[in-house]
Length: 79
Image (cartoon, rainbow, N blue to C red; front, side):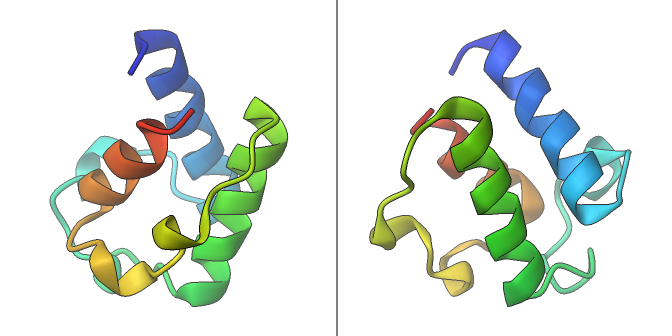
């Protein structure tokens, strides 16, 4: 993953999920970070629009992400 993409994803995370400090919640579970399925989909759609990609269905199961960091790393690996 390019550093430039990581920074953009962090920015999208902050805007979409109204949390400017992604590093603060990096190791927290999604539920601890108030990320529910609707917020997750909003985040994914913002990623798709920014990077002009389509996130495949295999990445859309929110239950596979144990932490915020894992979610960002996984989604970031496909951009």
